[in-house]
Image (cartoon, rainbow, N blue to C red; front, side):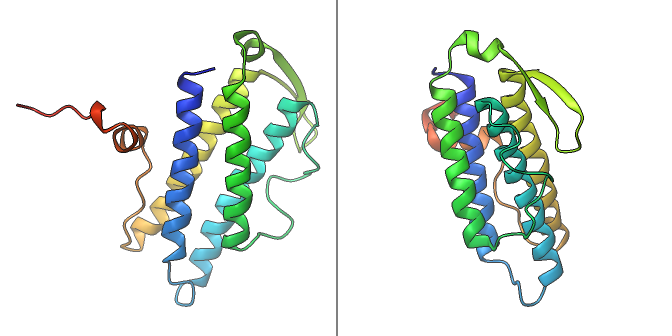
Length: 169
């Protein structure tokens, strides 16, 4: 499939790289609590991504009973896990048929409640959930006087396809 989902998951992967790169420059010695809060939030996003991956492939919650890791990984380990997860989603959406997108998937949330969503709804949840929480991390940075990394679809599109950026003549 070539289309909006491939574009959105490419954007998501790019935004994650931008955020992780920004955090490598963060003064963790001076602000350890803020850093841990941001890392915890980004871990939560990835755990939810992996839980929904499990639902999409019929593997349940992928072994997770909570929406965070038992122990939050360090930034380097998290970057590797996020990259692998983002690559999986890109491969997955690249091979989807319109029929599969509409397919309803029944699953169990980590709290034990039952749910059902179409494959497409699950994918859109992954996109919007990640954007929401990256925004929270960006706000922590901004509140500390640190510019947050670019995290918008327009920035992604114009950086990766500069011809889309129309200039006044």
